Length: 143
Image (cartoon, rainbow, N blue to C red; front, side, top):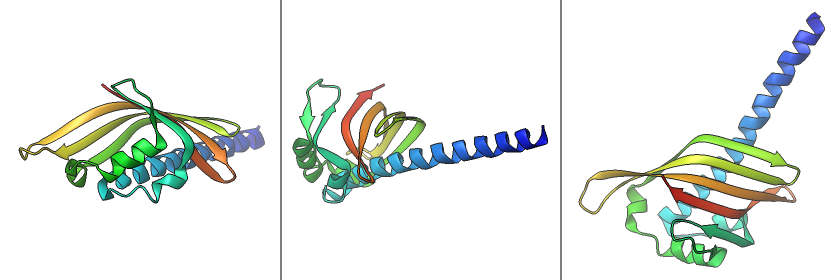
């Protein structure tokens, strides 16, 4: 019985570590994306987005990776004062496919000098290509 209890404790501990590691890998990808908007430079981010990735949002239009890269290059200066936080991150991995869902808060200083926050529900799908997770779908819906 003692052996089974030790095995269960080790299993649960290792499962949680795996989950945290996977979540942090995807959070790092989201942080890289946000930094690309801040720096107006998508160079580092592009390796984490598949060439055929699609993006949707409030306007319900599909955008391509190239369109998002242009948005990054021409990003508003509010990103310079901005910060993004990720809460309730849930990642489910099915072989070489990962689905991520989270609540995101974008906090920034507006042009009138006031601090503002916008909340979004992110849904993201990644595929594993070799050892790299690549974004293939991103949806950001304001809440």
